Length: 392
Length: 219
Image (tube, rainbow over the protein chains, first blue to last red):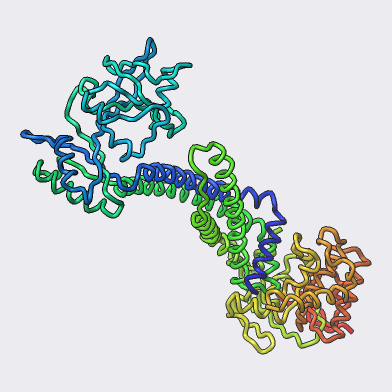
C-alpha cells in the first residue's frame, strides 16, 4: 500500500467526520495563525524602528559622556577643534543636550522635550523646517533666545495663531519662535514632533547646567564612520583615561541593540507558539485515541482482510498529519488575513508577510501531527484482529 | 489443537484436542450451539488467531507460530471471510469496501477498480457500486461482503453464520452463491448453528464444549 493510498484513506475518514476533524484542527489553526501574526507584528515593529533609525542618516555617530574628569570634561569647543583637525573623517559636530521642561504660551501650559544644539544639527540629524528658519550661527554668537517647535507643540499651544514670532516661556525663560519643524510622527505626543529646539548658547538657564553630555557627529561618508569612531575614541580616552567614561556609537550599534531586543521578542513568541502547538498536538492525540477506540471494529475488519501493522500505522499517522497539515494551511491563511486586515488595518506597523515563518509554522504543525499521532496509531496497529472484530 | 483463554482468574478451554483435516475443495459445515467454540475454531482456521498449543498446517505451512504480519499476509492471499454481521466499513462505498483487500495487496488503482466492479457485478450489485452499506439491504450487504471475500481469488472461504442476519430468501441466495463457489473449486468452511443450513454442505463437523463430537459426510 503506497503513501497515496494511505492519504486517500485519510481524506475519506476526515470527510466522514467533518465536524470533529475541524474541531481537532482548530487548535492547530489558532496556534499557527497566532504565531504568524505575532511574528508579523514583531517584524513590522522592527521594520518601522529600523526605517526610522536609518532615516537619521547612516553617517551619524553619537557621543555620550557618562563619567566625569575632575580637571576637564570634553567641551563643545574641544570637539569642534578636534573636528576641524580631522576633516578627512568628520564633516560636522553638534551638541545635543536635552531635558524635559514646562512650556507656557499665554495661559496654556505643556511639558515637552527641549533640545539645545547648534546650526549643524539640522544637517546631521536630517531635520527639516517647514516654516521660518533653523538656528543660525548668529543666534549662538549673540545668545539669542529663539526656538523651533514641533507640530505636537503647535497643536497643543497654538490654536488659530501662527506661532512664528510668538513668545513662549520655557522654564521661565522667554524664547521667540522662529521656525516650525517638519512633521515626522503625525504630531503624536512623546514622538519626534513633541519637542522644541533652542540654541545651545541660550540653554544654560533652561537646562540648569552648562555641561553638555551628548553630541552628534557626522562622519565624512558612510565608509569613514569606523575611522571617525576610532579617532573619537582615542581622543576621548586621552581626556578621560577611562573607556567607561564615554560611549561612542553609530547606527549599526543601535541596529544591533534593536536586533537583540527583537531576537528576545522572537524567542518569547516562539516559546508561546511552541506551547500552543503542543497543546494543539495533545488535543489531536486525544481525539485520535478516541477515534482509535471508536474505530476498533474498522481496524479489525481491515486486519481480517489482510492489512498489516504497517498499513494501519501509516493510515493513522497520515490521518493525523493530514488533519494538522490542513489545520496548518488554514492557520497560515488566517494568519495572513490577520496581518492584512488587522495589522494592516490598524496601520501602527507595516504589514510584513514572512514566507519562511509561514513555512516553519506549517512544518511544525505537520510534525506535531506525526508525533502526537504516533501513539494512537501504534495502539491501532497493535490491535488483535479477533478482539477488534468482536467489538460492536 | 488447543485454545485456552485467560479470563481474570479462570482459564477457559475454548478448544480441546481438536484433530481435524480439511481437504482442498471440501464444503464443510462446522455446527454447534453458541459458546461451543465453533467461532474460535474458525478464527484458528482462518488465521485470525493462533492455537495455544498444537499445530495448524495450512497448505503445507505451519501457521501456529507466525507473526501478526505473516498471518495478515496469509489472510490476504489465501482466505476470504464472510461474517454474520457483514463487517463492511460503513463510511466506504460498496466499491471501496470491495477493493480494500486489493489495496493491501498493492494492486494498481485502475486494475483494482476493474476487478472490484466485476466482482460486484458477479454478485448482482453492478448498479449499487457507490452505495454505502447503510443504503443497502441485509442481503445486498452480505453480497458486497462476498464480493470482498472473493476479490483476491482466495482458495479458501470462511463463512461465519452468513445467513444469520438475513431473511429466508436472501439466505437462499447467499447459500446458492457459496455452492457455486464450491463448484468452481473453492474450499468452503461454513460455521452455523442451523442444521438445515449445515445439511447443504458435504461434510458436517459438530462441536460441543470445545470438543468435536461428530464428523460425518452428508449423503
